[in-house]
Image (cartoon, rainbow over all chains, first blue to last red; front, side):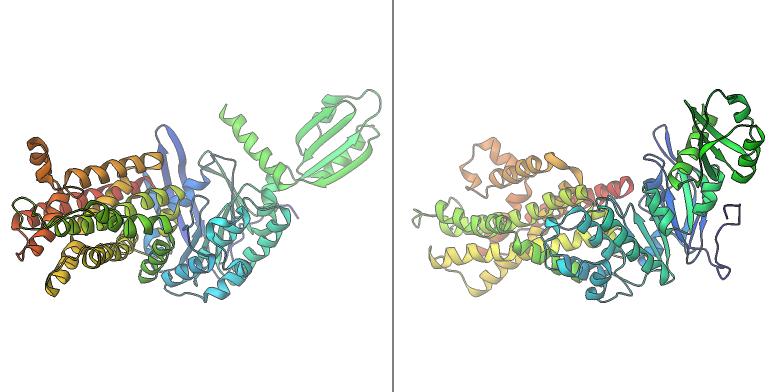
Length: 313
Length: 245
């Protein structure tokens, strides 16, 4: 299951939604985005994953034409980001995007609809975003999660082909977040390309059919969530050993990508758990409480970024 | 863009503090200043104090509406990220500034009219019908100069700085430009400064109408220069802000 496969690109895709070619953006001495090249294809749901300061926000700003690259080119539907926005092909919500004060939710959504060249009905937009019941509330009286839903409504006010969501579930509790995911999935199901930045890894795992891992402005990994996990060591093997044992022999096990021995407990990451476990029994030990489990995306992510840090230093 | 202008209007009308300051306050100030005035003419103008101050306060009211309406709100919305959010819509960049200015201009109209009403009803100021209309038009149009200044300040200052800067500019221009008291009462050196201020030329436009004259070319020219200066500055600051985003 976790074997390397080609990147999930629908067979029908010919056009390119987003193209980054060797894009660099520098602030002072910091390279926020460093020679980034990537392509998004129609219908993909893509998670942009990375720790704080990885360059996610800058990447989205470049994609939306809010910032200009120092080097390289950014194209959206074959044109400049601004042209794509003016044509109504892009809907976006930014973390840093504020809302207008002193107006109601409905007024703000209606404004957004009227600015879009191919608008939906404001009532439909609010219903889809799950804010119909707060339509008459003043925008400055909203909770964090409600404000995020209003931002989402503004981003989906019209028939756009690409939806950009920057940390869309920030400020939501777990149940609100999961409810919001189905809202996001509806957008993807309608055939739109959805790109969302997140630091909730389960979010990427649950929704995205492609995950881009960004670290220090560079693309560290690009594949399905399963591939990202595979790359970091597909499986986690944990067991206890009684009495003395030869730690060096454990470290020499085949397909091992990581090992942690603490007291009698051994935790191993392996790219081929079956072979590793087989070899483990070959050592003549008697592992107790043996567990073999898939690696969570979160652990995979940590493993990949740590490996990168190690390479850098 | 019309929808944005409409929404800006609704917001402006909902903001009670803003409405009070730009619509009621100038008329109240007018009644206080012109309260005990008799029919003595102001030096060299042939106008009574009430007539003279009516134009001053109508200009002051329009100035309040457009300057305050633009500067503080633009600075605040730049900070909150609303300006950024709008840049993700097909709205052209200058559309935001135009809508803000249009919104402010609609509030400035009642502030002019309320001063006129107070003057006509309570202080018995009498003018020809064409003069009332021309006054309204001239003061309304002239306020655009200060709308541009408001936009410039809104893009120049941010956070805590915008209010003090706006207040200094606002009171400085109002008082030194002779909107609160005739600048002829100033010491000579202040009069020399006052005559170069846009507010001085602004009030002079209306006063010329009251004296049944066409506005003076020098005043129009001075205002035009200021408009180009403020609008150019606003455009430059806007562009800078856009690149920084």
